[in-house]
Image (cartoon, rainbow, N blue to C red; front, top):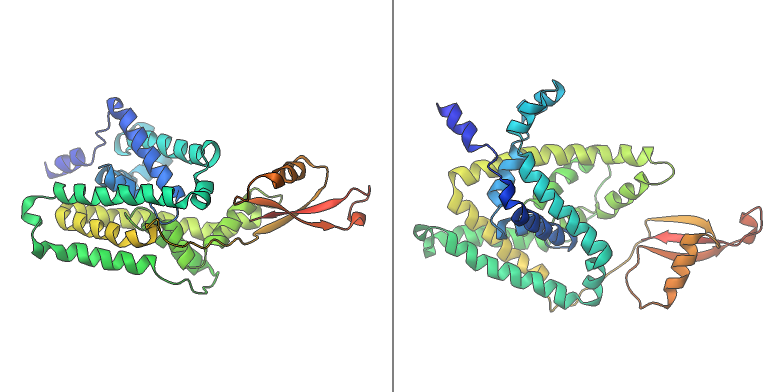
Length: 331
């Protein structure tokens, strides 16, 4: 009887009727992941699907993996919260596409930083009050402020850490993957910010870019420990959060609210932000190539952040036909 109740509790209760709501919530999570300092976990907590998200991640267990290898897909779909994930991912990837191509949020972060960060700052402040109101009255007294204070201090400590030099060994890249994915599902703590603290943000982006180069094998090998760490970190951490939410729900929510409070420092819109660009790779192309011509035509546009730009001109003799060659820098 206990196993049946547990199975019923962990079953995916997602219905197609709530599709629009889950897609919109996934859209909010995706838009938050684009902005440094804001995590998708923050939006999941604000929109009220945080517990469901943790249980959905937890549904990927050893039984599901065994059924995949045994080709028992009916059993896989019964245990795995595929409907919840499908709807959430549809909204999330829609947001990533929308805010990187149609409305380039990553550009507006430079040109209209006060508006972008102000929007998320106000959203988080409002959600803090809503989450506290939802906590049962017996957990709202001053004696229960300790979890919020502890979460706020920890969150503030994380977002104000100064990056330090770190190695690029197998074990440290794996640890970076585990810590960044754990931060990604924690409200108020950005996974990309953890990579910045560990000095592996540029390294991971560079290797991801190398996957689409002419020689992707080395890049894939370098990313293997990162993804191994991310998988194990997500699997273990989601189970820990699930256990905390099931057994200490109010206290866990108050600690997560504290994370949100602590993260407000880095999202405060009226502060001076300095942006620096680093060249991740350089590609030498003919002056007549379509990409080079496109980048040249952009020179007359406002000074916005670029991901590819024209570098120095290479010696004409570098090309056997005498065509002028230029460097394209990927930043």
